[in-house]
Image (cartoon, rainbow, N blue to C red; front, side, top):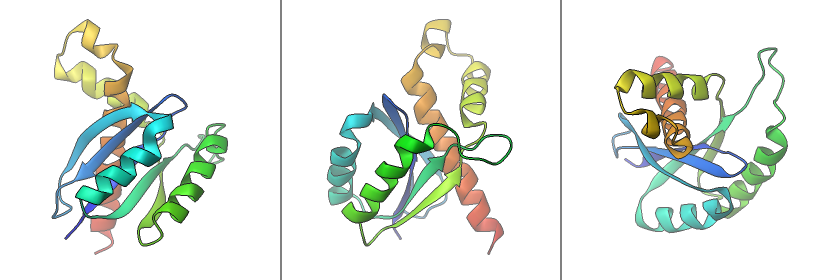
Amino acid sequence: MSRILAIDYGKKRTGLAVTDNLQMIANGLTTIDTCDLEKFLTDYMAKEEVSTIVMGKPTQMNGEDSENMKRIEPCFNRLKKLFPSKEIVYYDERFTSVLAHQTILNSGIGRKARQNKALVDKISATIILEDYLEKVKSKI
């Protein structure tokens, strides 16, 4: 099997998470500068087999797209052109940042580490991927 990769796209930083080859376990991969995303993904996919890219879709409580969709949609479309053989999907990312902050608090790590925004982005991507995996499993 191949991996599934999740993206928590941000204006400055982007968090990434990836599954194992059996697509059972989601792990935080890294956080990168958003301007480096496409190069990073190209390099990563040259080394690892990825079948699906899951991009977090920021949605407001009323179900409408958030302001950040104006930045995410062009990236989503570029990725579809850059990786035409990959399945690229949106997945609702509501509350992932809140859940990431809560996860960090519950982990017991120090105050300075809790302020690390890159860690929040990576954990948010992991939460997106975990939720996506649960949704896929529930359809089986």
